[in-house]
Length: 146
Image (cartoon, rainbow, N blue to C red):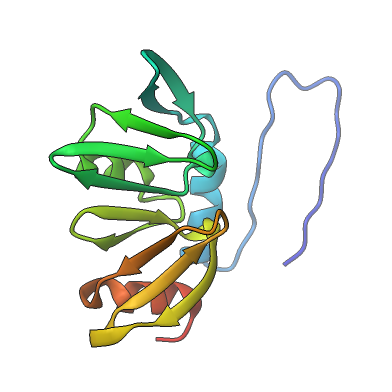
């Protein structure tokens, strides 16, 4: 893959052109990453609503019918349901890890096999999450193992 950046002060808007043989999954993810750059997720903490960049989010989980968004240092509550957040973030590197959890793949530091065919995931902030057996194949596909 080769990258070329052409600076032109006369342009009013940035344009990204991708020349490829076939628009495979890798290309589509890059497009989603660029187009999702302006996408924000609303999270509530301390009586205020914060607009979060998806790359700040480590994982999202539902506990007692409430949805929580976890960043490096803070926990936010969301009015959206888990499946709604999953839909919004599906074009980026988020994946379903279980019935009540979505993980940002880019925040994974280490993976380890766990009992019953599950995976134990250690995130960059040191927290651990479990990927249920049902969702392990999607993680392996992302890693190129399956």
